[in-house]
Length: 85
Image (tube, rainbow, N blue to C red; front, side, top):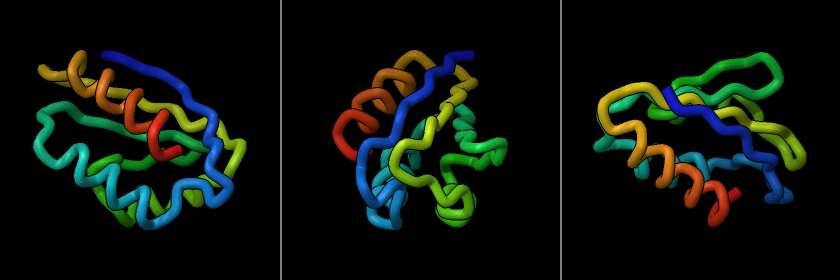
């Protein structure tokens, strides 16, 4: 299991366009990826689940990755956060 936390810098938070990019980033991964924000948890591979978190600028978003390709996914998600959040 790999975990990391990222502070959202985008003034719009985790909005629909970025959430869609996240889903596309994870569509072919084997690992289970969950997001947690303010005590709410979401399956990072499901758009409505991610959008229901209502992530805003300044929120600390926690990622948990579990599975056979978790090392690869961990690196990809860290880069995703730097680029989009």
